[in-house]
Image (cartoon, rainbow, N blue to C red):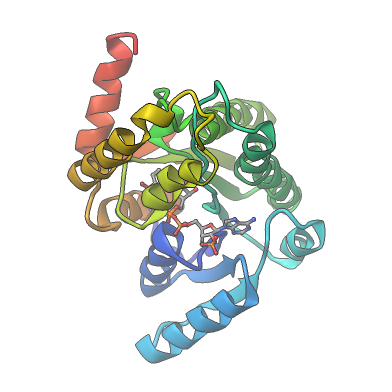
Length: 266
Ligand SMILES: NC(=O)c1ccc[n+]([C@@H]2O[C@H](COP(=O)([O-])OP(=O)(O)OC[C@H]3O[C@@H](n4cnc5c(N)ncnc54)[C@H](OP(=O)(O)O)[C@@H]3O)[C@@H](O)[C@H]2O)c1
């Protein structure tokens, strides 16, 4: 593990894991560029940095917009932390495919397009790390969360494949996956709620909806880590590693549950 200062761009840094990782990395002396979905979030984050005496550059970057993504070409990045993501829920038996496509657009396609731009500089400089924030929902299928879960399966596969491809170039550019378990940022609650906006009386699951909603609330209340500390510690390790390993998972107990579930063939 090296502690040389690195230039690290984090997408979706206006809230949650991305925001907390930005502060943790900046406090460790790295040059953090915190990219946020909106300019208002960038301004608010800059205000927070000033109040806390933390040095950080902020940038408005909606990763689905080519003109926003192009900003990355001017930045000499050591690490790209692809953290921006959206949640989507509902049964695959009935969810509108435009919702699934929209989730793939942010979580996979725009993420890969941004990564391709970052790789130009990294491969030319023969130095860099690309991190994808996937999820344990990309390791085991999650009923009623499949519109999201599928995007993370695809992202984890993409990250592992890209890692093997770049290894063949021997260009000192590394790829790794960050796989958080359930963490209380508000993301899971917003994601599970989204389906109830369109699950009307015609839904196959209308009769179970109230029970399902109550169960989801109980499950997340029980499962979610109360804060982002464990996953942020893994992100810091991955950002600072000379050769990051393929997967960084936290909280560890949820990672263990996933490994057991996969061994049992879930
Ligand atoms: N919390 C969990 O339990 C959990 C578990 C596994 C994986 N993850 C993953 O961890 C990452 C961060 O999630 P989080 O829990 O910290 O939730 P979060 O606070 O909602 O973080 C996601 C961030 O991405 C931003 N974003 C959405 N669309 C974007 C776009 N087109 N361009 C740029 N930024 C965009 C969001 O902005 P707005 O808020 O303004 O929409 C938000 O700031 C996500 O990739 C998520 O899938 C989270």
